[in-house]
Length: 310
Image (tube, rainbow, N blue to C red):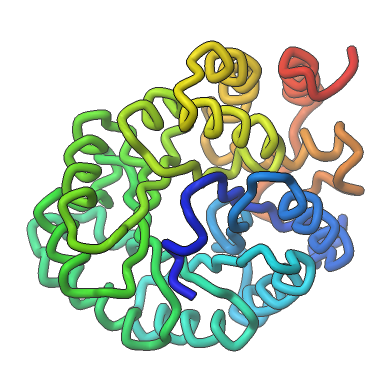
């Protein structure tokens, strides 16, 4: 099934729960995925992305996460992140994702691309083409921030979509309204549907107003119903309802997406622990647990968002 048949909507990027000893907590992971996937309006769940601390997972663990999530998500498609420097490793991850039950891939650009791949577009095209050839799964390209050096120029994005028919969507975290609009115009000009899924957590409502098809964000691991409410209100042109949903999301965005960025998803785990939806908030080393002051801020944000009683 092509990803465009899933529609836009909300695609939460799920977390990877760990035991206090550092192993994957399979029961907690499945409960987390089932809870998120069971939210009305969620069209797909994403695993093994930044939110899932995938860089700390070895190959076997990434496979286990996909298989566990696919079982827990039921009819909701699981999209597996592919994070690797070597295209051979990325291709192996793509094949394994398909074997473990994923129904789509979220393809991350290698960190190496930050060192000037924008000036070597053939390098980008080769990497994406090699991964696409490794499986039949549809692909969502991850557009990282312009500042990171891992964003794709509109002309390159157009060429990738033209050359790789498996590309079914773009997760845009460009953090640049100008680049976002330019890429959106490219996607709308293609002869086939390619979804624009915003990950610009500082301006989700605005990015939907530009014409985005949905939201793909780790924020959905904590507040999927609020993201659904925002998306549905914007799709219906109900600005009052959209502003109300956005106002509830604002304290969460402010508390999660603040310096240091290394703790963004660590904070989300703490939020789920406070909400009674995770047994442990433990991240995997080298990340460390949050201190009491940080936990207090997260508690206050959950209260302000209406997700927790004071």
